[in-house]
Length: 307
Length: 276
Image 1: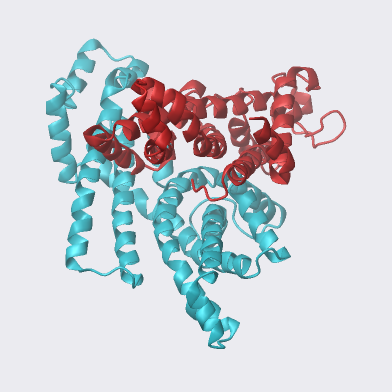
Image 2 (image 1 turned 180 degrees about the vertical axis):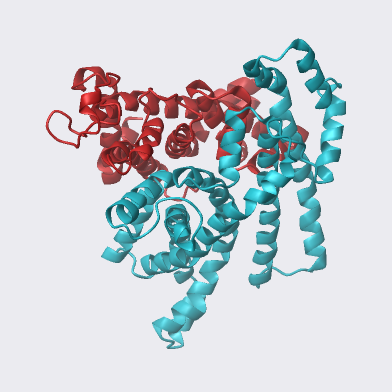
């Protein structure tokens, strides 16, 4: 187990390194100079531009900038915001809990709901239930989650007045955003569960179980479902990454603070260090998440051994 | 090709999806003729009128006709998706084809790069590109297009690896065909099916991403009739004029649903075992 874990972490190192490099490349090699863009609006003098360039280390050769960037990132220093001059990592950490809560709750809702829907659709294949579930999944991956959010607000906040339309003060304020965000993930989990259940039901061990005279319930819960759910776990990691960035849009739709609003504000004010920090942080988070999922996968799948 | 068209016609889902996309495209193309009003003309006295009467889908805060704006917006949104997918397909497939065909160290390096790019959820990559290039429609197209490159590179490389082993490729090589000839005449046409399926599905993704970026205010600028920007406008008047946000969303739903269904259907038709 320990060897598997070390191996998995080692294999992630080049990816992490690449992610850091790419985030540097995107913001440094593409056309558009942060300082010029930023100061053009405020009408700064050439002297101020030069001063800021020096302050940000932009006057150094590119490779030196790169090395110092990697060094700083490794020590958890993501630079300072050009606009507010607070450390980027502080801004990220202040806003991370809100985004994490939103996407985490959406995931917690999506896993059981998606699995149940997918299992029902798979077991009752080609029935009206199957058609309803499949229709639902097809529609919900075809609309922007933020639009679903707006529709939910119109129904439950504007028309019925049951839930708050925006903000993040009370726990109730989370219900609609979580519902809107989880819909896409529910569909993906449901579709994957359905496919895997159909696949599992075709296997020889199901035939054996039937031959032994086991009831259909036992066959489903003891034999088909556990086998069908193993591949679903890998997908959950991927989905969480999507939910995390999907939360950016939901935050905008519900006027909630979070990493998404930080990112949009930073893009609009050309606050490059903040954009860079938020992007890098999210990507690193995604890489770590996938390691965790791989380990989980190895733990629950008895077919994987650690020798 | 003809048999493929026939098969599409016989496939019920494909027929529905193609018909929907065809109608959307026609509505967009003939929007200026069909639109009952000028989509940009503001009439303060007709602000936030409910659907009905002169305004099939009502009016927005500035009194602009929403039906006209959805039609004209279709021109923008549908084209954004097309261009973005074109960028993803061209760059992604070129990378995938070359990487799969030449293999070896080149392939190794390219694939590690793709791994790194895949560590960024597509929409995040798109957002950071918009951050650098600046906001605006053209930059959103580029950003969304770049965000989709990895998938095409991965899928096209996968099929090249399989096709490379085929006897007809060996045969072509033994007749002295150049690499370019083998790639364009023998590999590319055979690698097409999964790429077409992916392109159809990516179109939906690209349209959703682009409207999302516009919704965040990073794409089409305010007066522009673009579905995402219209949703953003509609959000502000949600309490008094819900129709302003409902109809652009329905237009997105139909377009994306149709392109996803078309992708599914083409996959069924071309090869039921194919996985993208």
